[in-house]
Length: 375
Image: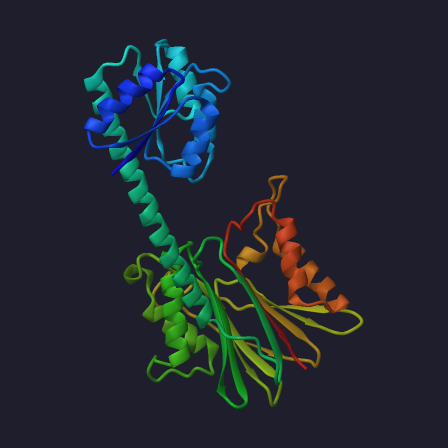
């Protein structure tokens, strides 16, 4: 049974409205002024409120504003009862948050019809809220699942830390690192075009495919071969027009050599040296995976000095829209990494710097970064 709250300082109007609405099967509650009405509304959470516009102490407009400002009561259907019929008056009522009006003197059939219509809209709003809560719960579960797939930090024989912040509940960035054998470590980070669920699904598919080594006859020790195989498997024509960029490397712990390939992805940044930081950008030619068939990818090679640090990241870490309207750039981000290297602070410093730099509550793009310290 729907609850209806009547707020009116006129006892005669209260009794007439109560009698008419109770005959329609509604539970009717009453309040004699605005303050009492707000207290009743907060306590009982009615489906619909009929409130007189002109009352002492607190008028109907202010009651409406306060009711609609309460998140719990915001979906309550609010009808202003008024003898003010001019367009400017109705505009004031709508601006205050009123959903409908009933003119005085009250015509009973119109009252019944407007109440029925208001309760239908109230029920629709409640149903939408329920569906929204279900969807948010499912998205949160999906986000937890994606995070559970990401690898934990590594401490031996090298140190790997990571940060991942999707711009929405779900993101298109994904990364992984795992041992191909006791001496070879595979490391990659990919960034699917777009955001949200449509970008997450291809990322998870790639992660599961690479982690299970399900591509037949593929040499996972050769990054260029891996990218070529992914390009054949994930052509955007068959993947809802989704392509992704990727940086993929294999590190040999014995000879300290890194072999890598990239497909349309930002370069990895290798920092070496303890007193003076040397910067090397690790990237190779290659189009984003899935964009064109028969794409060609090549390997790059790099020897890793002791106490070096490698950063692999998505473009969300530096394509940040600043408060002055400009976009932060890769070179500026690398300078932050160099400062981090000389000060020997952890990855949280880098993340906090980016959060401070970003003028918005959330990043415009997914942000992910891997930090690999080579002992």
